[in-house]
Image (cartoon, rainbow, N blue to C red; front, side, top):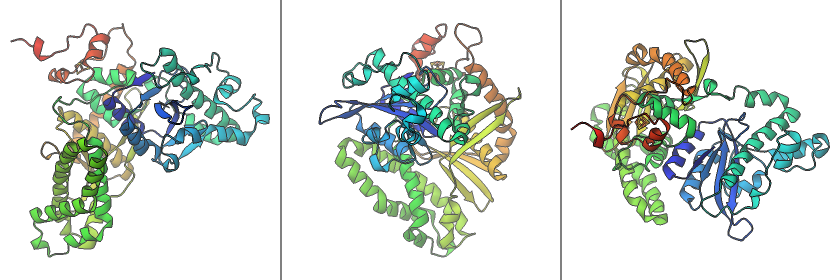
Amino acid sequence: MHYLTKASEIQTQIAEFALAKVLWLDTEVANWNTSYPKLSLIQILAESTDSTGKFAYILDVLDKPDLIALFIRQIMVNSQIEKVFHNASFDLKYLGEKSAQNITCTLKLARKISLKTLQTSNLKLKTLATELCKFSDVDIEEGRSDWGKRPLSDKQLHYAAMDTVYLAAVHQHLLKIYHPDFVSNIFNKIPDDSKNISLTATKVRVAFECPRLFYLHQKFGGNTLFIPPDNQVDIGNSFHQLADIFIKLAVSESRFTEIFKTSISQLNIDEIASRLQQLFYEIKFSTYLEKAVEQDASTAQPLYKVWQGLQGLIRRFAELLIVNRRYCSAEAVIHNTFVSQERKLEHYFQLPDGTQQRVKGEFDCLVYNFEVKRLCVLEYKTYQPVDPSAQLAQVALYSYMLWYQKKVAVDSAVYCVLPEFKEYQYSWEQLENTVHQLIHYKLHQMQQWLSWESPYPNSPPPTTQPYLCEICPQQQKCQTFFPSTVVITASNLPS
Ligand code: SF4
């Protein structure tokens, strides 16, 4: 099981879960029998065939309201992800209540089937796990233990993880009885070994940066972002959220259209960018900032950075809109530039050994440039990447998956918005001759790395860029797990 306590690890994992189709969830609550209960843990399982809790995640959210709010925003209100609970009404009290979307409750499902058909003593999760799914040694004691104390005992953590395992098994059994057709949709093809595990475009990027980091993350979870310590890491979510809102507003608000109602020769980039920025600031950003600062004054500085990043992004959008205005009316230009479509992608790649590898991902934005007659998929970063070629691998995957879906060439770009706007552009032709040809081999290599077990030879190799070890978020784990590794830091570089 993966027990996550650090905010950055939890944020990264929430972003991963946002790509899932189905999640099995449970919560533990501190002070549950008092008038001031508070959420202590959120337990999540994304691999339904796990019978030991090895793939379960436990997010420690005690006294971390921001992380709970992030979980609600990214997971609970996301209608694309099915969230399965037992007795969902209890957990939803702490996880978004009525705003939660796409919830399945196995207690309700069991009630529909009835005790008589199930032939179990009652409909409690642990009873169903024991009597319906034939689990042995099901612990029922720890549920009432003290979830407000820290550190939690191993027994408590095991108990918390196993609840999601029981839940997934009970869900599967109930569906088999109630709706057999659904079982194959939800439970088939879910991987139970490293060979069939689902990869994401982000994981491919990590594997390019460092195979060992990719391996450690896949096996144990944890952070994978190489960010220098002086860099602001907590602004990514706010930036992405506001960038999405900007596009939604620009497409739907007539005041944005007004800006382009002038003769094409008079469209000046500085003026258009400034008007778009100003309008967005007035309509959205000022109130967003005000509310955030009201809740927590320390957010002012990070949000100032977010605004800097947004200004760079909006200016880049202004350039593209001016180009496209030559081909579209003022009324149509914004709508035609920002392509509206499902941002989550999934593709089965055929590997050199004849097997298939599923890769999922979610891009940030898709735009159309009328001058070059090309779609371009965009990835935003709120920091300068330490390895632009690894970023290239990530966006190249999006472009490949979109090409497969749409059967048209798709360029890619990474917009690094801070500390100042910088753009990395890759044309379809560049990608086709390089990354697209390599990607199947790379995925095969990644599968081989994942099948490695200590102490056998041929472990995943370390990064080829030793300076990354200096800022590696898993440097310590790497040294423990790969003991023969000499992690290269400033202190052991030859003078
Ligand atoms: S310390 Fe270096 S080799 Fe180890 S995981 Fe991190 S980047 Fe890779």
